[in-house]
Amino acid sequence: MHSLKKSEPNKLKNKRLTMAYQVPEPKIFACTQSTALAEKIAKSYGAELGKVIFSRYSDGEFQPSFEESVRGTRVFIIGSTNPSSENLMEMLLMLDAAKRASARHITAVMPYFGWARQDRKDKPRVPIAAKLVAKMLEAAGATRIITMDLHADQIQGFFEKPVDHLFASTLFLPYLKKLNLDNLTIASPDMGGSKRAYAYSKALECDVVICYKQREKANVISHMELIGDVQGKNVVLVDDMVDTAGTLTKAADLMIERGAISVRAITTHGLLSGDAYEKIEKSKLSELIITDSIPTRKDSKKVKVLSCADLFADVMERVHNNTSISSKFLM
Image (cartoon, rainbow, N blue to C red; front, side, top):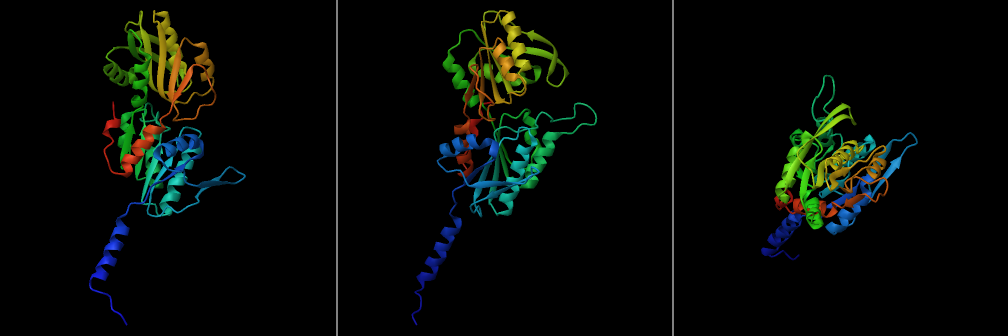
């Protein structure tokens, strides 16, 4: 019987250690409503989307199933959580499935973080939905969150896990610079967005104006006033989201009345619910620029979509390789 040489056990041990410390390539999966964006992200990343199927019962209940092993790997699950609540439920179930399948790291990639407008108690006996959603994501198994342009920056503090909060300004600023607009002025459609507007104005070295609005109730504006001068200016309204488009279109019409040459709007998340498209078409807005964080419902000559796929793919690669992502934080 031949005995092993002394060096051979050490070689076998080193081989086992090397195999143990090899970091497997991450796997990327998509929630159903974000499949188109996830495919772009995966292509930019240089990977294929992972296989996942959804089994559905006749009453509407559904069950996601990963059709490949995720044991010991880093998993990225891509899905915006705009209503309906089914989109959030998909994300939660996929996170739970990855956790129970022994994934090593589970990152929820949420281009749009839904329910974020409920980030505080603004009257008695109401929930703080953004905090509740954060707790549910962590309970379901998320070990990291990657998102873009939260409705309120402080939502990051609702999480106990790391949050990479990206800014769509990395997409919008190059686009605005290419337009070469003379007498450019940045505008905020409300007081709450003034910080964002000032950040853009600093980057573009231009003036700022602010709209002051009063609401009767959610999505209904009773009065709007303009703080600042737009006479002879090309105005760009900046906001984090556009829902019914009531605020943006009313602000655009007001600014044209006050002498603005043109009014554009850049908003990260194009919810565009209800009759938003019709409002935009009838308004004085020259153009609405959004990202593809949420799938658009229809095409419009006035709506331009910039893809955020490369931004998310780049950050996901940096997260996986443990390199800095600070260059993506322009604001």
